Image (cartoon, rainbow, N blue to C red; front, side, top):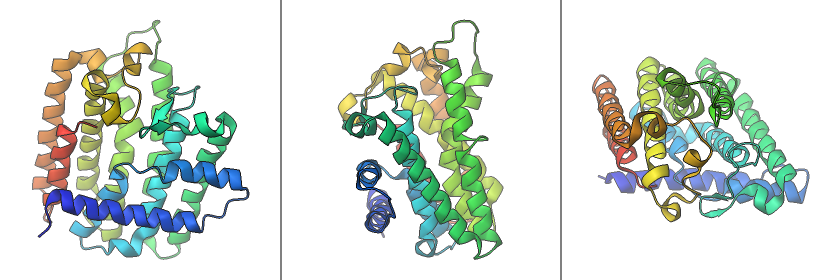
Length: 293
């Protein structure tokens, strides 16, 4: 039986292999566009979204290799979001995964187009699966909703609005809505998609995913204050500098730590109600709580 790190690496490497396979046949119109896309798509990372998809599908008896298009679509959308998030008009970050951000290498215009291309290609992949049946269509709808104006895009818009806005006082309601849309829904999406494909436990996996996503963002906020730039692979301290609404800015470091502990316990309680082998997901929740990068 594989240990948690070994199983995580197996899932992560499966995702990496699929992305390399995708890169070899990516139908780009220009060489520059393809170089820009692959610079970010193949930059490595934890690949937590496809890992979550594989793990949840496996727990629910779904052959995740047969559903590989969904894993690739997840990572294409995530990578597009990182490229756009680093742009000067957004978070204005010069580094991502320890390397210069896409726009620092290829320019802002090409970075925007690389993100657009990845998003469009993700939807090509999703549409290609819908003809297989209702469960695949439901999974495609789940990812579309999480990535769009009811999810990540809305969260990024809220983040921009709250950052440095001194004309209003924002509290926990605004913060948790921001976290849910910007981060948690795209963490929950792969779990719900796996449940869609299995035809069971959609509500439970959505609940677990939103809690895990909240935990992920809380630890991210904490690490922005106490983490190390080398380990994180990006510039730290920018949240405070730009006046962002974060758990630390609202509750302080001690309050943020207590909330992270509460979210972790809530994750485990949800998994207790799922009649499947959720040991890997339990360990993953623990690793998110204890993460250093």
